[in-house]
Length: 155
Length: 155
DNA sequence: GTGCTGGCTTCGGAACTTTGAAGTCAGGTC
DNA sequence: GACCTGACTTCAAAGTTCCGAAGCCAGCAC
Image (tube, rainbow over all chains, first blue to last red; front, side, top):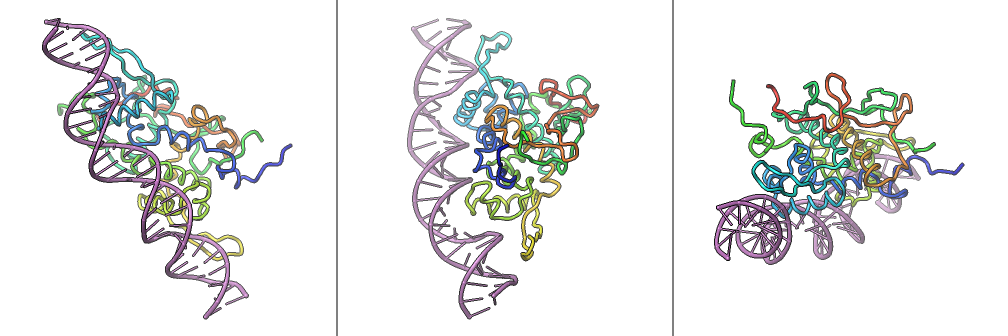
């Protein structure tokens, strides 16, 4: 059994490598990136729609869309609007979809604490009930934040 | 019954005000802010510990800690280490704790897609099982991201 | 009253981002 | 082959953010 430094030291990520949160934030932790992902989740595919709906400059949109594509959150997909020719747009990959809990979590938190704007909401396609993000353990217990602890894995 | 613009127009947030995600990102959508919240969640209270564990300059830490405090995610709290005098530190408020699904979600996503570093993990204090973030509707159905739709609220 | 520690603040400069306006380019239509 | 549309790219200017090093100040202990 290897000796391990105490948890206080292990949570000092500089000692054990970069924190996954940090890596994730490097990819999606900017206003434009997060809003582009939100739009992609809404089903937006066209470049100009991203630009207009997110409200950013084309150059900014292009840079972030490329970065998200290279990082594997978006992929180029051909789409065709009725009576128009086929074009290349963007759609979410699995990795992009798997970030939706974060996007929805930010939305939920924003409605409650930062905004109050509840003009739109997320709902379950199947039953129509409103959607929330929650934290649970593998045993199925629903958790509040003070029931969650950090620990060294594989002990 | 009022006429409402179609959903395509409603999702163009410029038409109906600012998106809650945007507001949330303005507060917590930067690397330093998110990592400071992570640290606060780990129980860090002291200024110098934030600086060292997050790996940012004191000026940056001070600016973000102040912003997070003013935004209501952190509050000043007195703490006392054994054999030392009482000092002022930072601790999470309810609003800060309620952002934990986002922090944990970023961690989880980062481990799976951006990093692979699984030296630490989150666990349930009560039963020890590992913790995950998931999306569910009010009826209790666990949802994948393609079962979640946006709609105009209060219809 | 001297020293020490924790918690910041100040400063200048470097690095990174975003913007608006304009231009490019390829595919397809008429 | 002229024209149109969508999807970008280019560019200079402006703004934002970060860092490192240094310094400051308040509360104690001695």
